[in-house]
Amino acid sequence: MSVQERKQRERAERERLIVATARELAEQQGWDAVTTRRLAERIEYSQPVLYSHFRGKREIIGAVALEGAAEMAAAVRAATSAADGPRARVAALARAYLDFAARNPAVYDALFQLDGGLAYAQEDTPEPLKDAFAALMESLGEVAGDGVHPGLFTEVFWASLHGLATLTRAGRLLPEDAAQRVELLVDRLAMV
Image 1 (cartoon, rainbow, N blue to C red):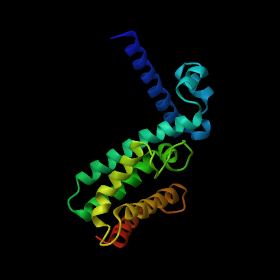
Image 2: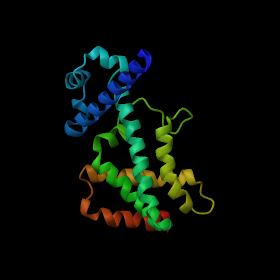
Image 3: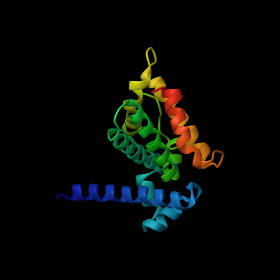
């Protein structure tokens, strides 16, 4: 291994450490607790080293969001691949999405609530975000209905899931009714 390759590998490892530490701190104490000073202390590097990887917290949030998008896409695909038939796939997708949001609140915030400097629904949208949307559309597109654009239907269904996730987390919806909400969403919106 050349010196250049070793340096690139070490840089990538530091970057993964920064993102993992930011994510861990955010999950434990919230995003307000994530500062470059605290991250530098936790990973035992100086703040200038952090700034050599990320220009600030916004970019760190973006990196966590991209990592989370890949994880969410994998979770949705795993759930839907085990389901038999369109209705079961849509229900599995909804449960996987809501489970992901509940298990990873800081990552979910990085993806959908906080400014991570990422472009959504644009030409320059990063691939992990596009792939997460594609993971939703793979199952939802087949139930969109005649004359309904699969992407538009996916946006509406996704917005419904986001609302359920956000309102449940905020204590506005009773968690014990989550299964009934999924059934209503699948039966009435997806109509499968």
